[in-house]
Image 1: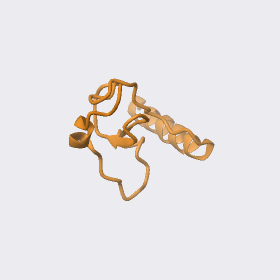
Image 2 (image 1 turned 90 degrees about the vertical axis):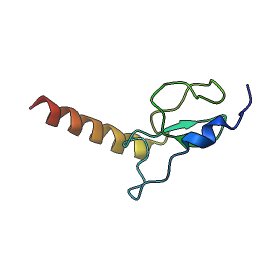
Image 3 (image 1 turned 120 degrees about the vertical axis):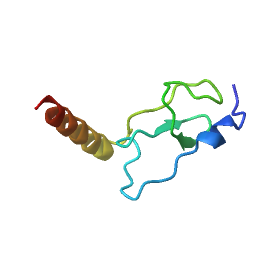
Image 4 (image 1 turned 30 degrees about the horizontal axis):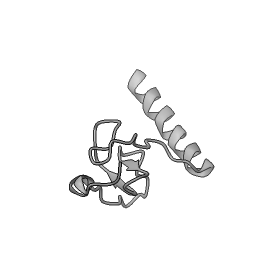
Length: 75
């Protein structure tokens, strides 16, 4: 299904830190946009949203932050 433009209402601004996935933003590969959305599926086209980075460098950063957050929540 093509993009219907509904996702433009949920468009997320780029954070100063540049770490979109860590703060909870998700990317739709069909609509080619980062959105702030709680669900796993794009509200516009219905495709699954990407919640993790693809490149190795950013995967490592993401995993370090997730592990750090888990350890601080356990204590």
